[in-house]
Image 1 (cartoon, rainbow, N blue to C red):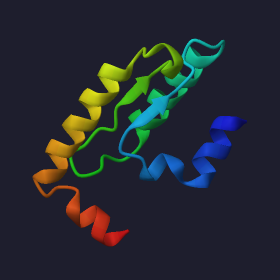
Image 2 (image 1 turned 180 degrees about the horizontal axis):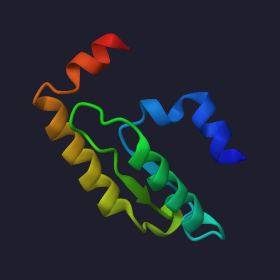
Image 3 (image 1 turned 60 degrees about the vertical axis):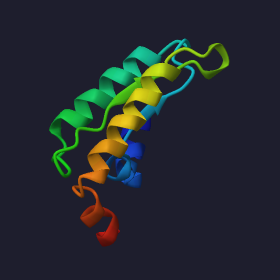
Length: 89
């Protein structure tokens, strides 16, 4: 039910990076799998495939991967591919 509510709220359409914090909790792997499955059937946005990054912020786990994803997104956005998308928003 939660995944349907997320889709309805439009969040699946606007994020450039998806972070699953508290990824050490039960059910986090299932959430990640469902999120990846939903993204796989979503239309591509400006040649950017939003990454899914599991983290455990209190332990610093996944933080290097999140930084890398942010850096990759910034590099992609600088090419201008995302400027038009932002303008439309």
